[in-house]
Length: 324
Image 1 (cartoon, rainbow, N blue to C red):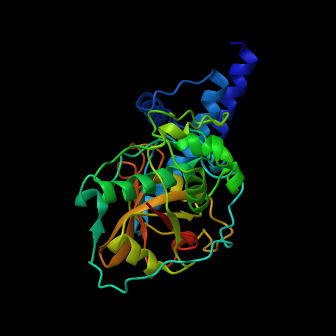
Image 2 (image 1 turned 90 degrees about the horizontal axis):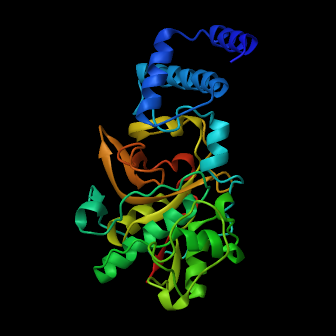
Image 3 (image 1 turned 120 degrees about the vertical axis):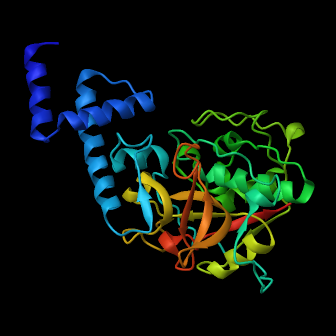
């Protein structure tokens, strides 16, 4: 490396008050997550990592209902993270009309479909593609089908990425589970993950009807902002797909009940779709148990808890599930 470049990099490190301890933490994190960089990128990522770590440490010193922690995203700015893992354009689910018929209870104080039987597939990883909507869709259809048939079969996200555009979905740029369920219903089937494996990028549609493994008879949309209907559905029927708005602190979530004062709670700002597999209460705070699609090393083994009953980050704006 030439002397001028080395001087520039060292000056940059000094300017951002990076200490030997910061580098130690960064190198340790790099080893954990198998990260390699060029010399120039090393110092850029070191700076971002250090800023993220300081934010995490400051948050954890305060009185919050959730804890932040280092994870596989800790060398990214939120802008970079948003481009890779969230919808590039927020989806507006206000057009979705509710058609859910509530049972009106009574409901158990808590429920977790993971513990009721073999009804929930393992946490998957969407990679650097804004395809979370497909994982929310398959996760829900996998569970609904397993509850009805007793067979839990991982289904194909890639078919939805490649084939569901006519239903106002946009591959790696976003979509909505309710619209994906419509696609599966009119398309007359969804293939398995094994027969149509995930690639994390958009390709040509390769759907083979003879290999369809799951079907949708009808799409149930829960009334917008009616979180009690979501409770009713999860308590009496099955896991439920929902969308919400992810803001910068959520990428650092580690454990506890997530709440935010930054996010919006309207139908037009949601940018990430997930799956509610249950609910409960912790220290008097009601929460949802939610399956994410960022791998099992993120959050609580790939899951997170989010405050229930307050439409936190718009989570009650557009929830849905299929009937099979």
